[in-house]
Length: 208
Image (cartoon, rainbow, N blue to C red; front, side):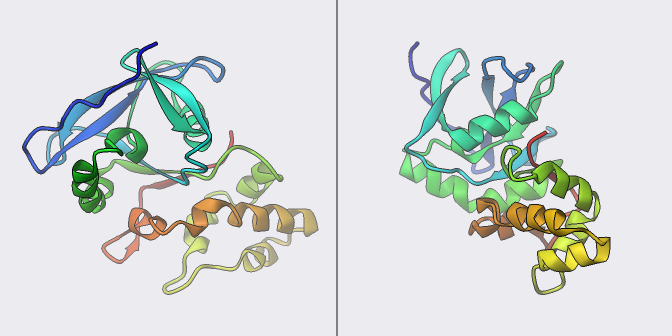
């Protein structure tokens, strides 16, 4: 299969690419198409926030029927986040930005704040299920965003557990959840905060 090559963006400083993640079930090959759109246009999309992982270890997906390599963590995100019956439109930096075109990459990075500001939802991918992460997510539930960030600081995992009366297994699950690479990314603050406060449209995903 031939490799995918990005088509140049138009001259508009507001033009971006969007991933159309095609429907499928968990074990199906990952198929996407790429479209161009204007940030101030009438188009609904989600924006993905995730940790790349090792860029030297990749897995193949198909973009417009052509081969494209993505990191293991991104491949897992696409596999978990796609819908079974309809496409899902997502902005994903590693795919929507031509990473080897330095001029384009620098230009697109400068407008990432606007990309997340205009997204319908910010999808946070913490990674696949491991270390009782399903237990941690169930335990924290809808409180995870409210309790995660204080006015000026991150909440401590043990403070969340003490309020829930959890046991040591619960504590370990939550500590390991908060020890995942996403929490240590430099871009996390920009992607999750807008206008000085946490965005209201953040959806955290971990495993199933």
